[in-house]
Image (cartoon, rainbow, N blue to C red; front, side, top):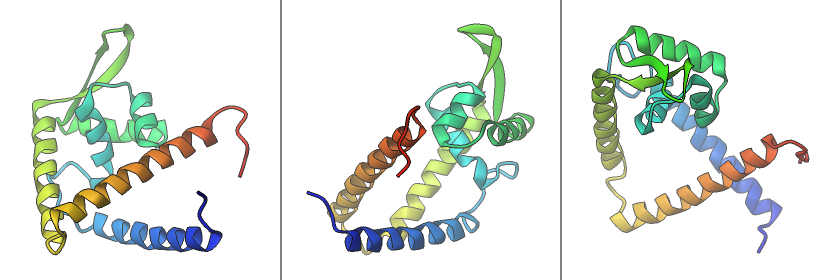
Length: 157
């Protein structure tokens, strides 16, 4: 069943407000390492999954390669990440977390969980789980839309 333009518009407006608040909060969250800016957190989270090439990280976090490359350079110089030869192609490099980088990620995850626990104090566990399920569904929809718009022969909507 399709939703009405009015409902879609209301949701779009609500999401704009949420995105603005998330942007404002982004600058207020505590730093977990003096050399790691909050803008590098998506890179760290991508590296938490596995070592990757810079271009793969950029694709994963929906950023451009030059930005991710600068962030990686900074993380490497801070001892948070390291570049090593790609096992699949020795001519290329992959980036991986160092032990310090894994510690930073663990601290980030623990602190973020506590922050959300405090922020959602008035919510029940069932409400949080329901919200998380809708959020995961919306994330999947966004991923599908990104893939559709980035694919060759896309139709502009």
